[in-house]
Image 1 (cartoon, rainbow, N blue to C red):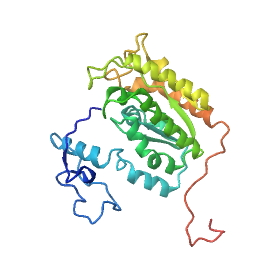
Image 2 (cartoon, rainbow, N blue to C red; image 1 turned 135 degrees about the vertical axis):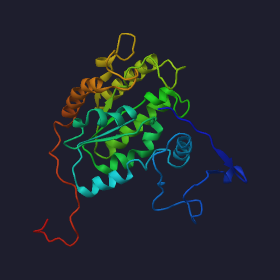
Image 3 (cartoon, rainbow, N blue to C red; image 1 turned 90 degrees about the vertical axis):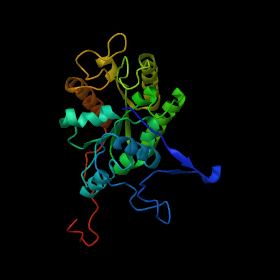
Image 4 (cartoon, rainbow, N blue to C red; image 1 turned 120 degrees about the vertical axis):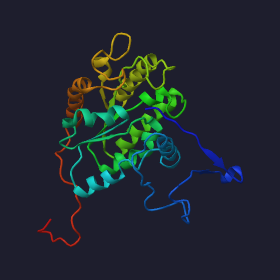
Length: 281
C-alpha cells in the first residue's frame, strides 16, 4: 500500500506549469486529449516500480487504466452486474483469496493502495458506467495511513459522500462497509489508526442510517477490544487472509440481499445489433 513519489516540475510561469516525466508516451502528441492514454509496459520490477508509480500519480491518479479494458469487455458482453465492490487492496485481494464471491453479477473493482480521492476519480468508469444494481464501498484505510498525503476527516468523509450521492443519482443502491480493524500499518508505522477507524466507522453507520443506505459492519466481527485485527484473520494485521474473508463473505452477502430485496431480477444489458430484426432481438 505504500506510495513512493518524486517528480520534477518545469514551468515557464506558474500558469503554464507542466509535469515532465522521461518516456511519457504522449509527449509529442499535438494535444493532451488522446484516445488511449494508458501506457504499455510490463509489470514493473525493482527500481522501475518508482517510475511506474510516478507515472501513476501524475498521469493516472485514479488508475483509470487498471480496469479500462476489463470494463469495456464487461459492457460488450452484456453480462448483468448486480454489485460492484469499490475499494482498495482489501477489496483487490478479495477476488484472489476468495474468488467464489465474485460470481452471479458481483464484480471486484479494488485497487491496492488507493485513497478516497483516487476512488472518486474512477467512480464513474468503474461503477456508474457498469450500471450495477448496487455498489459496495469500502474505503478509508489508506487515507488514515496518509498514502496520498494528509487530509482532514471531513475531506475523507466528503469523498465517500460524493461516491454515495453519485450512485444514488444514477439509481444504484449503496452499501457502505466499515473500515476493517487495524492496530498499526506495516507501511506507515508512525500512524496509530485504531481511534480514527472507530470514529470513521461511527460516522459511516450514522451516515448510512440517515440516507437509507445499507451499512455492513465487518469491524465488529473482526476486531479485538483494542481495535486491532483479531489473531488468525490477517496476514499483516490489516489485510484479511482466507480466514478473514471467510468471516466477511456472509456479512457481505447478507448486506447485498437486504439491499436488493425489492429490486427486479437482472437482465442482459448487451446492446442489440443495429442490423438485427425485431424477431432477432
